[in-house]
Image 1 (spheres, rainbow, N blue to C red):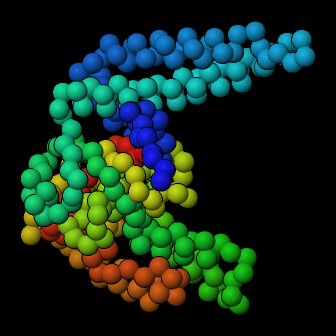
Image 2 (spheres, rainbow, N blue to C red):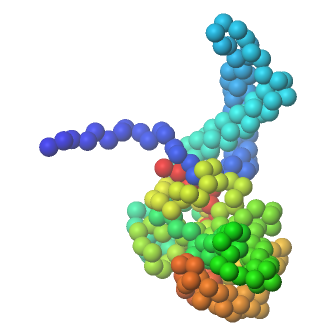
Length: 284
């Protein structure tokens, strides 16, 4: 019988999401010198890799300075982001500043505190409502318009544009609601919103099992309600907005069935005992 020898360390990380702004801001708060060191090393490495142009059969082919500078700048940014995460994650781990759990249930949920940084394994699932909006938008852009008259198609496109606004964050990027459940698809749920700005490899393979690092933003009480769709994006949610949006979205349930992305009422509103998390990194 074969025997598997497990790695002593897990050094490789395959990121699908990394909020590098949160990491850099946090790291600079308690170890600013580390960022300077990372910047210095990544800049030296990138400059060294481009010295002398590109060699090809003994001939030097120098790239345009503007293009070369752009490539170098992007390389420095990328290396800085991932190096900063490793420095930040290592420092928090060494200081015991990251909470972990093996099983996710109400007992663990009740031990959490707002502001906790947590690291756990989760089956990432995209909200059915986000899938509905993107499927509906794709449907209206399809050249196969299913025999719709121009007036009908125009109205569908208007609705699709409005729905796209529902899943846009305050910065204009798509805000993708996901469920991060450790070992169950039931409640309580850990809910997070991913900004498309920080996606590393797109959404094509997001629905898999990953390691997640996040900060607890809110632990919903029985009286709390948070709508998946926000209309007033620059203001705290109020009950009237939540109730109005929820009722309006229920009329989309029939269309959702036809598009094969059905959703339940609890996909529209986050309530007790859900936990709202601020996602920092998702990786393997």
